Image (cartoon, rainbow, N blue to C red; front, top):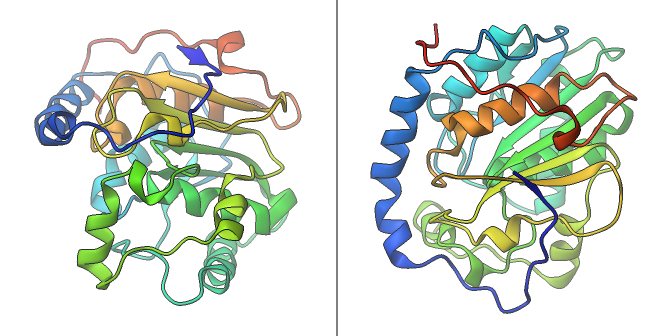
Length: 260
């Protein structure tokens, strides 16, 4: 499941057939999640976990993921900004303000934070981690195209519908987004993602605390995909300062009993 593949420079957006199947596949992933059980997953140590939603979604979409983290024993909560319409105004100023807001969600500055972001929310998680530095234990991104150009994702149309214009990324901003935060970082991706090209979710580099983990799933269902939940549970359980790659601590399969 754990890979370090190479992304190509000639990547295009996923085929339209995959995009068209997204709703059905996501519904099936949700149904499977409802029949799964978290009792066999590694238990948490109570540290704070902040979950960022994808573009055009909110706490309702990430609710199953947040609830799952709470069941494991973490102080998990939504990003607290409601519906995600994308950054407003100058991107870095907006991200600075978002990082200030996230710091208030866990006001004890001695506490660790793990940041989890789905799709565009993963870009927020990575950028917030760069700003909060030592407070962040790790970042987990789920279907996040931090290495994407506009042609490598179908999300640009949604952004334009919400904001009236296409997202603008100059070369400096693209380089910034591609640079990983200085904390352990896991990018979860699917080669059958129907919204973003999987290659755009691959973090290059040779740092030992950066990994790319492949799962099987749609884009819109990744937040409640049982394979993703297994990865999240395993990653969150890594003690601070003793992080190991996912394959070295592979979790047991989730049991077939209802998540409660």
